[in-house]
Length: 437
Image (cartoon, rainbow, N blue to C red; front, top):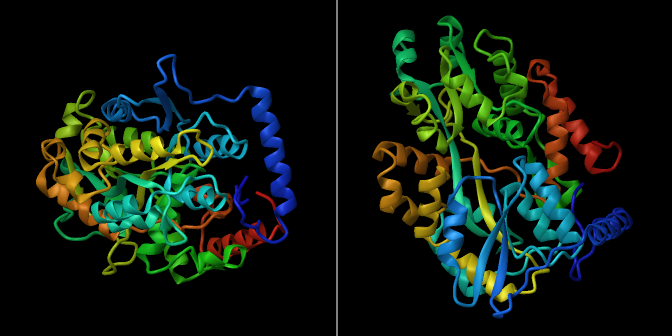
């Protein structure tokens, strides 16, 4: 379900306005029947701002408390684990004009969709300038729609290549130089190891596919501003290079047994097993094994994301979160003030230190809370990876594009040289209404 209707004065995409009105009407009825929550003030008149957060432990609740004031308290409610389910919950409630959401943590690919539908309140111009000055360029790009920042960049995540030092020593692989996917798959296959990735039928798999294609010099989509008329470019030599990596891994001895259902957690478990060798995963991995598998923690090495094509710089995945203010909040001014506090570099650092989700600002990286937790060369690798990362296409139609890719590239063992062409055709058919997901 894509949320494309503009709530304030805009027009729906050609041929879809009737459907959008019907969907919105149904959502209003559902929300009314369920009983819409309302952000309210207590008997003292103090406002409670409700922030819907990611299911990450501790950090967001801590900074919500730190940013509460005499005028308002920021309370938190947890969104579902799955990113697409987060989108569905927020979209349904916002389309139903639910005033029970003031602030929300939004995954980058869905920012344009919610903004295009008029569901995000504008960020004050003065605050936009501050955010642009303090944030990584990749973070502001992911937070921008129609040349305006529409969410507050909160944290910026990236993936690197994690490896077991004992394994690469046994395999004789020099990790001081860039390595390719072919090299690590071969090394793992020849020496009894695994290469852990995210390849379940979910958004994380598309993140991997996007990074592989970008690393080969390609894109999924061009001219995304054209909406359904955007150029679908996944069927390209770069798409074929990406398909070959997935085909090679899925048919190799290096493929973990749970490859086709692996998300971040399963990949982490495979990497922590006795035959764990390599893994691509987010920044939190550095401290993931400290308490439960200290021997693994001591054996972790790190390197730049693998190259899709030898000699061509890799383009690691870009992830993160922006904080949006609901256009249906009863307290938009206070919510904007609260969001500005929540994304201050020191608050980003507090959240990063507690969750492993790295700040969206250089100043956040320089904060002592972060500096104490990670080696200097790993912090530098994170920053370099964010700078070179490949964000997913910014378009209100991302959910359709992502769903079409998942449908045609999963399971990984089915991927071959014809997959990019099949994928391009299906994406186009979905966008033009010829086929349904």
